[in-house]
Image (cartoon, rainbow, N blue to C red; front, side):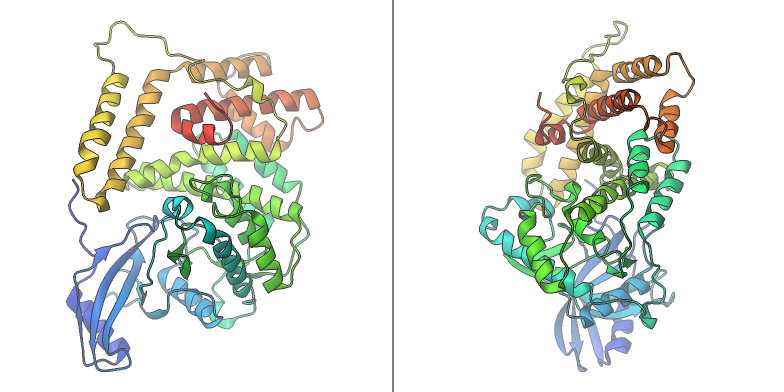
Length: 480
């Protein structure tokens, strides 16, 4: 079991900062704890006893600072604090932002302190809690109202002058640039980017976008919304951007059937937003932003894997997030090619690995299966609840490795054979060629070639998810 992580700050120095910032005579701090969540930033919870000043008494607080590695699109902590303060002033339900600090003598990196709100932000727990079921449509409606309130913040705002204004075309260009530098071709993402480029909606007046407004980034205490979290991606943008992101399938957790964040039908969320904002939502416009949300989430997932593969992060949760890009690719195919060639998609076990008799037995796959059983059946029940998520992540990683070991190179051969047939001859980089052709719209004027290309995309995506997340396939109607 991993050692308890140490806070990146000295408690005495932090207490001194809080004394100066609050006007208290003295501040005592409890032992900080690293809070769950926050894949890009670290959140440390602690209690502080203020002697004198406006905050006299015991306060429950959170210190938010950078993790060891991050993603380029994230705001800095001082900037995020400024956004949070603007949202709080506008009446959005957020944790109260208190103080920010960039002084390296207090801590080596910038941080800010906010009030700690009660409840949970765990998406799977929220979407599966039977005690919440009847209340969740009201939560979705409240979130629609909060989003409308957030969008009353509009440029120009001098204190938010550091925020960039990003429209759909700029988003797509940034995704293109990332895919250009990515070492492996992602033809589904290239095709989706092409579709977005050819279906740009009319621009709307910019508003403040949260850009990560979703289940998993708000706190519920029972059925009460206590705070909207994680403002590191905020910026000026289209008012439908956060709508599409909230409804993106990647944020429905255990309830893919509930299209509004996994908690309700779209109707409850849409109606409350429309009533509070005075805007009528256009379903096709929201669909565009939902497609863009899936492309963006896929890129973010790949950036998370970059933190492991390139940045040197040694974190299993971050590494597994990188695998979720293929889930986004399946959803993009379902959104953009709803009548696509699902019949050509492989069933489980259709592409078995060829056994290699020189290897010892039990096989590596069999050993992985036994190790996973030991982990889940014998070790998990005796581990403290706060560490069980880590063991489940480990079990997930073992299961992926087991399925890949069983499949061997059969899926790769399958796709290469289809690419050779599609292009009429061998090539050193057929998958990259397909990605480049889709990017340029090479098959848009030939329906037969377009359908054949999409059939390869479907098969490639299904094969990858058979190894990476077969449960996600089943939940989307691709049963065994």
